[in-house]
Length: 183
Length: 261
Image (tube, each protein chain N blue to C red):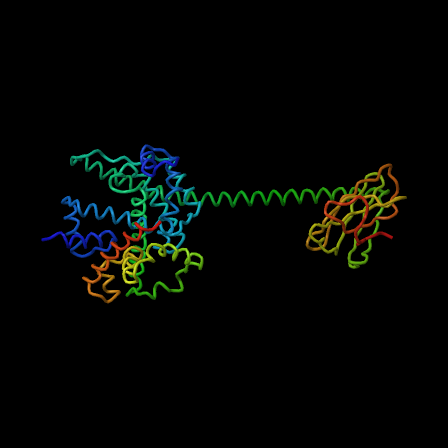
């Protein structure tokens, strides 16, 4: 019978390196596609993944099972670190090239992920998100995977901020129903 | 003020999209201990985790785990300072955090270099292995030449010319042959044997051809092969080379490619 994730975190907090290895094997394949989807470069994603699990090891005693599953804890951390990474990259780009627009994403200098990677990336956001109406899916993608704030989303979609806020809330409610009913 | 605006803010906050004035406003509300928003955020975190999990899992590059295991091998997990920090404790805590931060950066840099060094060590090992292999091959070649020269000094040694036949008329060969010590065959312009095949040398004294070993030629069509002496030092009348299965056969089956007259 597999040890629960929460128990593994407790063992890690006590300095158990084997627990860390088990924890990594269980959660790295879940968060790696998320990080890769956000940062897009495999090398960057590997860096961020390492950073995330290193922090987990260092702060395992801060985990409180009452506040959420280890999986949610890991996913939240991974998403935050990945967004930090692309925001700092974006800032660097903005310093040299203003204004930032979508053309930058297609700059020839930037290595583009190969077809398999793109398919993998897409695979991550397919699935649960796919079952949301297009407009709702869009706001979750822009916020969660692209890291835009609600104001930035409103600008990007040329919609009033109030509309975007409502859409975000409805999208999240809908998503909750979708994952609840999915196998 | 009703709770309603906070529900909307909690959703944006959960997606990391809350900005402007609303963000500190919501964080103050949350810090005030709103159980509804706390529960909403926890539920949203689980929902988003479920969304992430619903995609196909992907095993990360093994190097990441290796690097992490190396890093954690020399550390212990962090410990939080106990509750209610007093100012001095807080200052010490901050200092400790700064040191931990520096240590983290140091460890991170170190781990990247360790990875690089590990790779360099592997490359160096591979290079050393190759050099050793090359050296062994050269020593072998020198030993062959040395004993060939020794044979040439002996007045009993004969030199026999081999001529290309049938499938490889361009091929040539020389046998340096000593009735007691055996000798060598040197061939040139012989095409590489097809996969699973090799060249086999035959010595013919008075009866059936005797197998004298199999050999291959290099990319330039050259080959060298040591020939053991015949039992009883019987004189060899004919040397011949045929194309045979890789392991060699007791009697010739394939086409003859070289022979002495």
